[in-house]
Length: 279
Length: 183
Image (cartoon, rainbow over all chains, first blue to last red; front, side, top):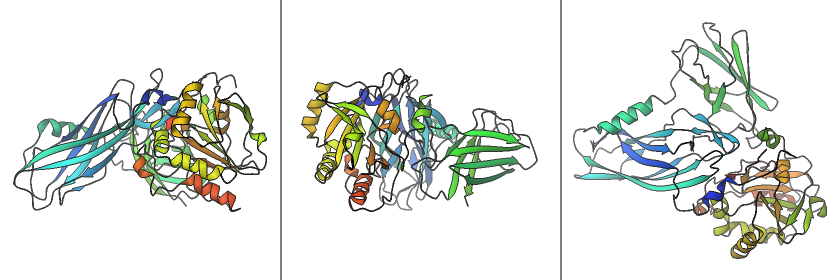
């Protein structure tokens, strides 16, 4: 086929990437909202990934290509880590492939709960972070990041805030998905697509837009085929192409429906959480 | 758009597309050269950390040795530019046990099969139908420590076909380094 004149693996630049992080293509940091931890306290820490220009890392469901960032914790006795709280994703481009991730920076939040009994001096929180960072043409490269990160916190009966970390984490919380009330949602499987329909309970019209997009949290839909959307009598329908690697039975639809202009009646909120059973 | 062509590639259950690709010695290989045989196509690039996972651990070579010993034709495919001398050296260093390594400079074979990552594995049954497409295993990471205990989809598919049974997991998401197609 004439279109296929030249092919290059984007991994070429990563020949020495295993077990190293050179080149990084991003800056990274583990940060905390507190400087001192009190017994039984739940607090938030974050992995901050500041991508070099045009590079990106991936969301919890990267799509048909890519790899989600992960954190494997090694915590002092009695400490517990919650799951990563993912900020809302964007479309990213791994060379020619559409995927889900973060183009500028990502602050991935994790809640940590301390036990009722703490050591007298300090505690050390350790995590192994793994990410895949990729760039589009013309840089054409990906790299795996493997980093052993740690945070030391003094123990105390009261909390001392880390103001810089607290501010950054607060900003990141504003980028978490938020509840949108007043919307009716249904979904059904039609052939090889799942059709998601949403309608404003008050009948507000939904403008059509080419950038409407459903970010599925489950990797059941291909990101190599466009999602088609239409509006009829104030009901928006978006068709999600099922991936060939999806399970035979898709039992649920969970994710975020993105409207680039913001959902009507929501003060401009662009991401509508969706959680539906499929029958 | 290229991605549409990738998306429209062969699907599991369909007849596997013919290809005509040269190996590292310049010999031409076609799928039709292997009638009635099980054929594995393994998209590979040794610079990719996910490919290295399976080669530095010896996992891929063990699969190649095991199944070529049972009559399976195992063809590595490298799409894009390739340095033949370097590939020969890598194959020797890694003790690659594939039947042959094929070169796909134009990307035509990758497009026909919808290969989009390295590694991406395709298993073709003796009836020339695509029986499996996807990842080597269920551990989407470049960490070789995950190989022990991983569910190996390729071995499952090949064992099923060799035993005359249905392949249970026919398609999975390949994980690895993206293959670039240029218009």
